[in-house]
Amino acid sequence: MNQRGQAAGWRQFGRADLGIDPVAACPVLLGGVLEATSTDGTVTARIVEVEAYRGADDPASHAYRGRTARNAVMWGPAGHLYVYFVYGMHFCANVVCAGDGQAGAVLLRAAEITDGQDLAAARRPAARTARDLARGPARLTAALGLTREHDGVDLTAPDSPVRLRAGEQVEPGEVERGPRVGVAAAGDVPWRFWLPGSRAVSRYRPGGRGGANGPDPVATSRLEG
Image 1 (tube, rainbow, N blue to C red):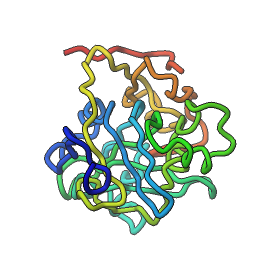
Image 2: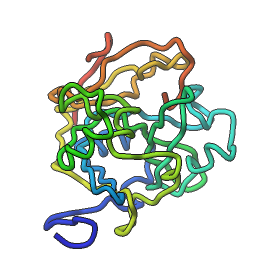
Image 3: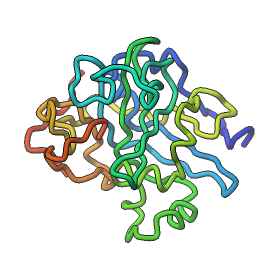
Image 4: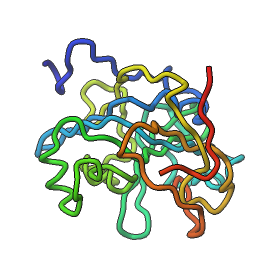
């Protein structure tokens, strides 16, 4: 192991990998590995569920009505972390995608904790099983210790406290897609992607509470080719 726990074969995502349309980025991110380091230690998670959010053409996106101080990170450059506070109690984390100056991000909905389980469990005492540690976007941020203080961190920098690297390749046929969870606007758009073989994938529920950037859906399709 070397700096920040990097191992042989370790490949961190670069800006070019993520500077693509958020919908196209979703399958790329599935199976990827997110590492968060703090004074308490490092927690590593394998991403198993994501959702795409675009800009002005996506009424469910924080960027739909334009740029604000809160959502400024969504305009790039790609490869940064966008963290927001929701419902006065939870944090959600997104990977900024699309080209610089174009708003877009991918919400990290669920992950499997692969290293640092004791620390993740200490942060998530309500979790009954290992699969529940990061099963859902708020649980994911809690398990990895992510807060608004991490908003804007560069996931592509080797010395970043939060790093994103490529995992084992996921084949297109292993990915399923369907409507986004809890989204009222554009609720039927199939921009949620997940690995159906993972028990950490969160439960689907239709929109109703508003929610933006906010197991199997009724309508799903498996990605091909």
